[in-house]
Length: 403
Image (tube, rainbow, N blue to C red):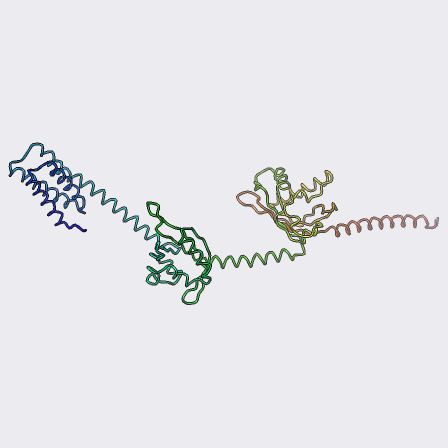
């Protein structure tokens, strides 16, 4: 029942009169005093509160004096009531501050909800949609009037695959959290990818009041995802069909580029792991498929039978480091699966992030046959040189002496 200012005054006038008739008994006077102070707090302005206390208190004091029933101990009650006016002022001031702060918080919340990038839906325990924000309306092309205070199942009409989404909705209504991606169809026929994240919400007593769903338009993300997928497919096709070996190595720990070169070389050899390569590269080493090389250390590939081979390998690595983690057309001596020495022509590039080498990409060609041919040519040339030298010497010995 709503009490008006007039009814509050009349109520306390009547209480003061009853107290007067009962000769200001303490059992009546005390409740009237407490009630006067308590009801003074319902007024929204201090001057109203002060006026109320002043009128009722002055009335009580006047009745006591006129009836000749004034007692000294009543002075304490009267003074307390007058003092209560000042306490009432402080209470009302604090009340006003709290109300102002609450309004600010409510305004911030409303502003946040209405200006957030995601759609927001509140569903109560009776499956009724109690609130949606403007962003939801924009994503779904459904107005507030069309959706608020309607049954939750109305949302299903928009989904392309309503059956699977219904199961998610039932889980949400049952008090479980959900996360799902789906396609909705707008009135104009446009299809939009959305992500739904739903969870129950509770009151201060821990009782579930309903559920909340956040709608996020992920159409642009799906487009990027599809584009990246196509690019990745193209990239993999290029690598897999290349007539050269292509590989990528990651390091167990990023290698700081400010370390001494000798330390970097050891880390390159020992912590570098092949994480990706094509089948063509695996066949260079006598394997069938690329997975046969995945996980192998970089050191395992190099042939270091003696100090000379080890020195050549370190020179190769040093050249890679000092040339800003790049190397072009550099030869290396390596071993295949059967232990046969293979010669490779390398073009490598390192990836630096935050001052550390994190990975290396490499392209290499098997030049073993070429090296063998070059060696045979050198040996043939040497044999020819020897032959011509001997032939020339023999011809000189056969020349007649004309002296």
